[in-house]
Length: 340
Image (cartoon, rainbow, N blue to C red; front, side, top):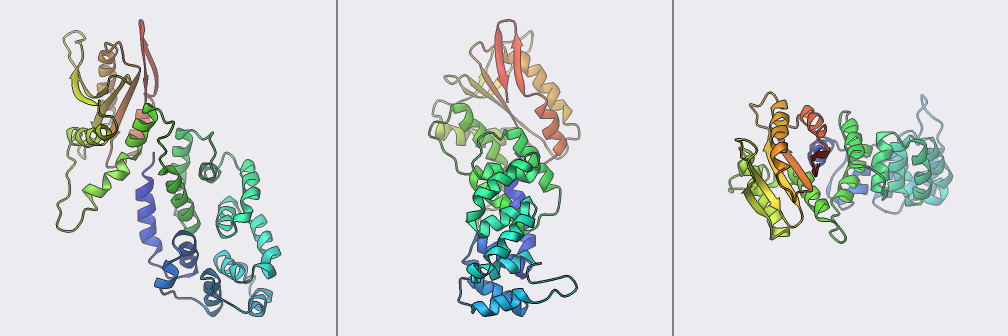
């Protein structure tokens, strides 16, 4: 999974530098309490929109007067969706038809934002997604709204596409909602494989707490090699699976002997841990190492699922691509295993 937490954190740091009406809308959706704490640099009409976001009383005639003004150089009170949304919140009945029209005119990203302002749009949004089903934004919204048919690879590709462009307030809101959905871990009815996958998928995000964001006067943990990664993964998984063991040797293949990093024998799962270091310039060597190791893994007659976890703190996209090529079934004589 793309480093979603870091993307959100970095872009939020950029966005909150501004004190405009866009940030008013962002705080209204993500953390309404911030509206009373922060000061904003707004025009007189935007100040009225702020009152709408803060659920403060505004004279309806004043709202209607603003919206009814003739456009100046093609710009009207409805041109800025963030200002208009605040005005709508202050006078819903008076602006309902205009607000509905703005929803119909918007692209899918704006439709999602307006749904966050007016949840009654949810039914229409679900219908609109169908027309944009192959777009990255549509895939993320479907995941947020509870779709069960989104594949992990499809979601990851959609996130990569969106993270390549400049992230605005609307996209930031969408990504934060997505993270919230993905972090709603539900262990009820989850298989062991699903739990292990969740832990490994979130490792790169979770590890930031101890390598970057520790409390003052507490030293940061150093993740220098794959053994450090293996130890952290061991601690997390051991708390969930008490039967977890580490570094079990497996039978030799020729003159070569391989040690299993982490093993859940009863669940027939093996976990191999690697790490990309700063000096590593050729990630393909990991592929060659793993291909050699695969021959040894077949000697584990009980093994049915192999997780190959590669921690890449430098976020090299090429690493993700070449490692995904290894996914799938592996068979040899009468033994078989599934690689993830």
